[in-house]
Length: 374
Ligand SMILES: [Zn+2]
Image 1 (cartoon, helix red, strand yellow):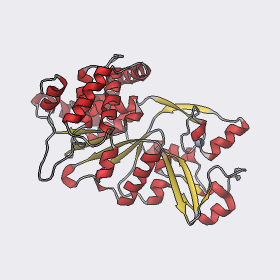
Image 2: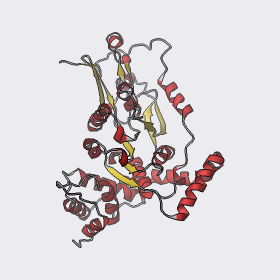
Image 3: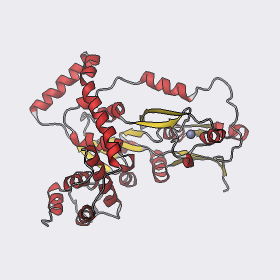
Image 4: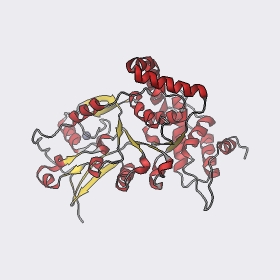
């Protein structure tokens, strides 16, 4: 079947039609209106590993996402939603539905390409967003919808962007990711592999940039994740209920304070939130200077051999995560500890299992490999 590609073939951008359609900016406003008041991420008690995994992705989007596994009521979605308040700023092109990057004209959508030619690009700065992908979302809502009849008359204007458009260069959050429909998983895998979302209907095809940080949370008691998707998500953290008595009391007290005196509670945590924001900003600046020595790479390779992982993706992910971890702690060299912390998040879901064997990930074994004692 031959497919007419709309992208890049439009010479003239059709005028906006009708006034019934809600403009993209209005949708954004609508979104902000309905946004719930968030529990400050810095007020979460414990769960350091989960918080670190989230923050490392905010510092370095190329890490490749996090999967948070744990029972209900372990602050998984509170943490992800709260992340929105401490995310760094990005530059986008004003009015663009796909959050095109002004610094990357190669990947511009058709509208930005047209504006670029006319020299009318305006850059705006705003914090990255957490875009929700609800488990029951329809295919059109996720990938966008294309009205074929309209496409013939109006070209690309017939494309209504979906969640994958909003999520470009932002965080895509899927709560209960293990319960996603197969068609959504396929769309996510395609977009994750190419950095592009393509919608094809009756021989017409529209593509737009879709390069997002995927964050999923799930309760493993409700079923496992498809292995292809599991493989795509770089880091994995397990969260458990906290068994420390003092910390449990603290959780109740903070929850009550948040519910009863929301604004005061949020104000009280603002200095801590600001401290986190500037730490992330600083880490983003340092990151470019962080280097791994050949010794560091040797340690990473040794770990991946010892833990019997498939392919080389794990090595690359550990190195990248370790470098980001060093930047977050304000260092420009990585240590064995950075490598251990990274490997703990990369390895558990990547070990090759032999038939009839439940191979367990063990931190002790990891430390032994790094210390050269095995
Ligand atoms: Zn654009």
